[in-house]
Image (cartoon, rainbow, N blue to C red; front, side, top):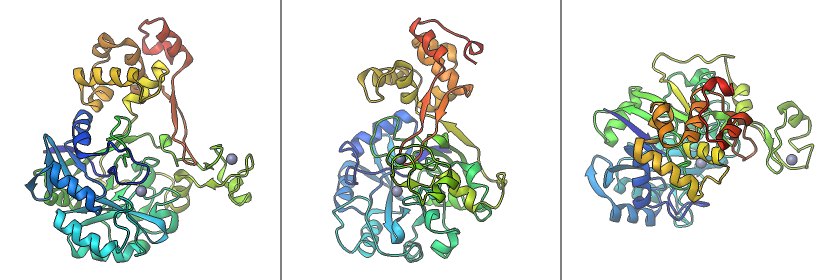
Length: 398
Ligand SMILES: [Zn+2]
Ligand SMILES: [Zn+2]
């Protein structure tokens, strides 16, 4: 069976996370996004484990169910060199035992715990407990594994079960690196809130025998990921090299010449994922192995609606319009990719035009960098036509 799964989110116990990140809120939103399996995140946090126990039913083989949504225990750990590692666990007992070993103190302080251990030490320990591990958002400049290492093997000392691409990279970018040719890629949301433009903004379509920890493990081992769905990488907040204070995009060679100090405001420049991958790549073009699934680029429907109507993405206007479409045609990915435009026009002609532009790749993206997400915008013509409430054909705004 094919399932859609987002395996990296955070609970309400992680820093800078919405207090709504609770199982009872994540489950219905995941369903609307078309996800069957979601990572719990924060599985080393004692209070979060308690909430998981109280609000789900254990159905066996690592799966904790809440209504129609299944959860698998996952945790992101910050280790030596501030590198983030993503771990998948087979059950709560293992989570508690590993948590005791990996996080010696301050276990309650953050859902994303810190340890002084190296990647290799965590790797060895996690393998002892039959868990799965890989770098989280592997290329990002603050906490991605490749910010500190030129080779994934130097960090872990062995072959990881997966590599998480992160929002600022995609398969083609990662497949310019030779050593990744036999490592499966995951695309996860790293959501800190259940809003529809966060949860499930990236996900994986995986072929599994059933929904269970063993089947996920088998699928990763046998390259049964069938598709990665994720943002256009230039929408990610670390895609380009940019200033972390004024967010101006800076040419990497100018950044180096200036000792990573912003020539405009004096702020600190962060190297973009785009440039970091060029530095460590072996090929100019992607060399994808035969098993590598397609990477399908998306953008959050709520953000398209937000731009069309010039209203904030979390406003009632945008959320109500999003909900209307989901109730009629959901899940979201169907609306973005498959539902006939004519049917969407019947509900909301303006949004239909935005989705057409997305499908026809005429949405403009101002690339993200320095910690600021990339932004989408539409042609002025499309927006003007919106105000007149007329339906335009695609040719009209090319
Ligand atoms: Zn992280
Ligand atoms: Zn600056």
